[in-house]
Structures are given as C-alpha cells and as structure tokens.
Image 1: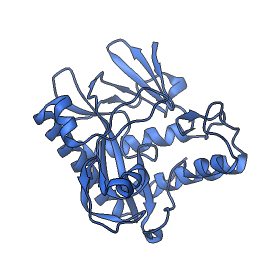
Image 2 (image 1 turned 135 degrees about the vertical axis):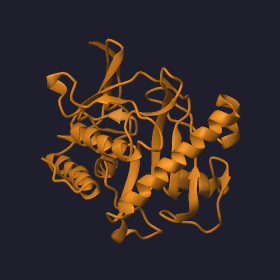
Image 3 (image 1 turned 120 degrees about the vertical axis):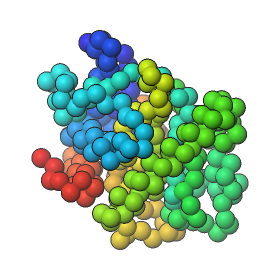
Image 4 (image 1 turned 120 degrees about the horizontal axis):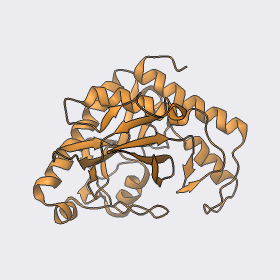
Length: 277
C-alpha cells in the first residue's frame, strides 16, 4: 500500500485500484491536531458510518467496497472503498442554527445566502432544513461559505441541484432516524464525488460526531449552546487553558479524554441500539 494523504483524522492509502480509508484516534480543534488521542474514536466513527451507509443506500450509491478486506492492523477502523472524483464543494445541511451559521446569521440575517426569519437564537430550529455549502479549503485553512448561485457557477446548474437535493435528503433521513432515538441532528457535512461510472456517490464518513452536530432532544433549549455528542468537551477545555489556537496544541488530561470517549460511545449506542465493545 502507498500512503496518499494524512489528514487531521484520516489516512488514505492506495491499494491497487482501491483506497483504504483509515480513521485514526487523533483529535483536532481549531484545525490543530492535539498530541493526545481519544481511544476508539476512529473505530466508532468507522462503525457508525457503516451503519448509516446501510440506511442511506436507497438514496444514492456509497463508496464502500468492504469493511473487512483491510490490513489486519487497521481492522475495525478502516474500509476498502472506491476512488472518487470529489466534488469541489463542502455539502452542508442545517436544520438548526448554531456554529458558523449562527455567526453569519447575526451578521446578515442569512446563512450561505439563505435568508432566515428574524429573532432566531443559538439552537433555534429552522423553518425547514437548508443547504449551506462552503468551499473546500486546504488543510490548516478555513472553509468559506458559498451561496447556491456560487455553487452553480462552480459546478453547473444540474450538479448544484443534485448536490442540494442529495444533501437535504440525507439530512432528512438521518434526522428522522435519530429523532426516533431521542437525538437531534442539528447539521451535517457530506463528501460527494463521482465514481468511475459517473454516478454521484457518497464518500468519506457520514452522520458521525466528526461530521455532524448531535444533541440530546430532551436537553434541547434554544438560546444557549447545546450539549453535543462530539469533541466539544475537548474544544471547551482547550479554550479554558488560554491556548492561542495555534500549533502545537496542549496535551489533553485523562479526565477530558475519558469524558470525550464516553460521549462518542454513548452516541454510537443510542443511534445503533448496539453495545460498544
């Protein structure tokens, strides 16, 4: 195998005509990889993605070839997948207002050019899910919001319509399934690309804590930050240290590591209904 790319969390290897996508236990905040891993994080992301791919397969093809035909040292945290020609747009769906969307809304009343009603606050449910694409920035740089018209200019009207339709369909399907389990999916980011036969295909990970915001429905309360099933614990701790958000990042204490791992495990178990082992 040949290492093609090492990202903030995933390593990508070339194996013949296939790719081996390996999810590490690395954790990054503010685009900086911290020196302390979160045990089992990569396996949880991989297994949760596989669970979701099965439940989205009727909406569009996905890139998975095998979850077992991978090198033994990567078992449980790697998948063999098709090579895709990735679309040069980050495809994001939002059903709730928070994060960078909230920042944009407070500045302009819009998110990625989509006008929203006045008076919304952190955590507000939107009237309907919206497509809020962004650029794909190089590692270490930040993605920038795109309007739908800018997506049309970049990829053409038909592809833009397909990206929006697929992104919202995946979000709605995922949100409905999660809601049955007492979980809100506030937003999600998808990676889409073209397979060798020209089909628009779902790649990378899908509906995981690293690509989506998950909130316990019984704790949801607009007007304040929500309790997320993700690395927010690490992010909040890192900020509290006075760290300047540049590399190198600080070592993460055991207590923060354990609490973060527990949140990933809890989400996996609530979504899938299976015990993590």
